[in-house]
Image (cartoon, rainbow over all chains, first blue to last red; front, side):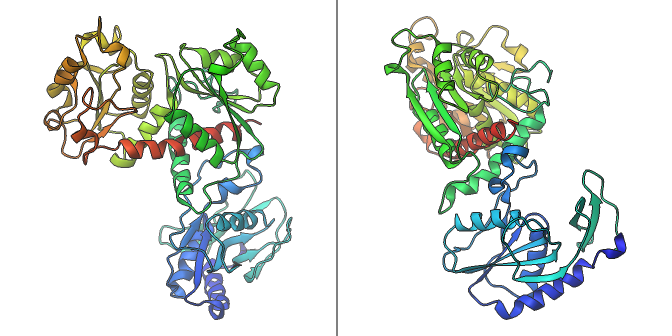
Length: 175
Length: 319
């Protein structure tokens, strides 16, 4: 199972390369908590984006709040630049149902009216439940439905993917 | 303790918020953490999130209040709830309807949450006990018993400025006897684990056996404020300024009013808090209330975020 998982660090370089032609002084990068913020922070540095990095926690915009309640690890969203008329690129680690991206887009619009919102992701595992598509995708991957892929940050700062069956502990993975 | 607590559901989740007493520390910390995430919402272009969309919140204030009712109303509206302020003084209660009949009628209007202030201690508990199971009740102050959201916004303020609770000396000054705020603060401070809670007041303004709440008792300001990290002033209610409790408000000010000179006994980075409304020249001097140590206005701002946190935690665990 582990051998199927790609190297997150390689994918970050690929994603940055793919995004580069679209980046200008008007580009604002916003990472979606938690994995998306790690990825966005790397890309922000690689592409030398001048506007400060934004972070979004979509807990207050999730559509499953009435069923599952508030996320216990909710963090403050922080966008310190004015999103009005900006070219926003949202960054997440994995795109699946599209519900997180939907929530993030809604939150961005509560900060102002951007000129355009694009979406960049490391892994697209398909199985969309909403009409949402990423503009930049480092890799497509197919995994069984009940498996959850998540990004982790190791002590040395390197990012790595891990996979687990829902409600099970992470299987450790080689990077 | 969890099983017996009327505020918690069978999973140990907060269903009503009635008192800080006996609440587990992790629940109090969760409220503070969620409040921290709501704080930036109040500074945005659109000061709203959709969490309580479609929910109906009734503000039932059987006792006058401006600040608390307004901040609850703002909190509910910023969560996208529909808010109904029931004006009790002109309502059916005046015509003789019982408290529980009023609640039953509002429940029949498909209420999701009651925010209750009442002059009688225990009234929100009674409402919580009789309300339909899907309804959440928040105590916005009952008699001299509890005011848990005020206490939690005070805890938020302390954590915001001091970064931790461990090791802090907290002094609470004034009319502890009649203060629901002080009771809720003392419970919360004990649960969150500050080093020492001191109450400073004349004997007439302290409840009997107050030390059983887990506080040290002082009757002298200089001794009580020595090396304090946090000073919480309580409002001296006008009706208590004369007669059996105190000789006069001037006398109280001379002995217990917080002046720059009395405050100098505390640590140099002390913060001064007050639940409001403040009586300048009675319990606090204007130089202190408006001075560098005062965090009275940040308290009000944090109050909105804390009330948003409590409301969203309650309704998010209704299933």
